[in-house]
Length: 151
Image 1 (tube, rainbow, N blue to C red):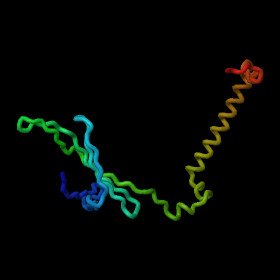
Image 2 (image 1 turned 30 degrees about the horizontal axis):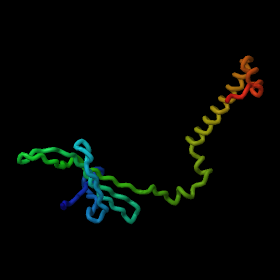
Image 3 (image 1 turned 120 degrees about the horizontal axis):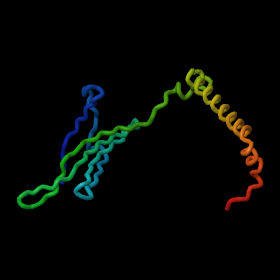
Image 4 (image 1 turned 90 degrees about the vertical axis):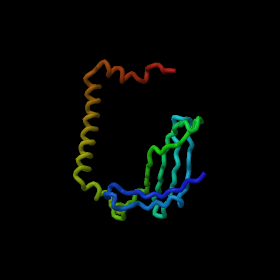
């Protein structure tokens, strides 16, 4: 069995003006047949580019049972086509060289640090006041070392 077709992918983010280069025969072609009539079959082609990008084109088929000349045939019908492109997150030279003091100059970073410090202090003071104003719990805290061990 052989399948021959040509793929032309158009990028919707560029108003379909720039076609995406995807040479199907140069990729690694994999497939998976449907286990039963309700599952899907998949054929995919994956291309690893030299710049670190990984392009994958998947053809997903559903199975359909048809009666042809008094014989039931199980046929594939194209359900959807999925194109996925993955690539590494690139860090520019300026991001790598930025120091901690430069990063902390932003107002939002300083504000978040102040809020975190105040909430931590309020939490500690709250626990101290709770221990101080609940004398029956104060006795429990002081006698923790005398409680029997739990097995």
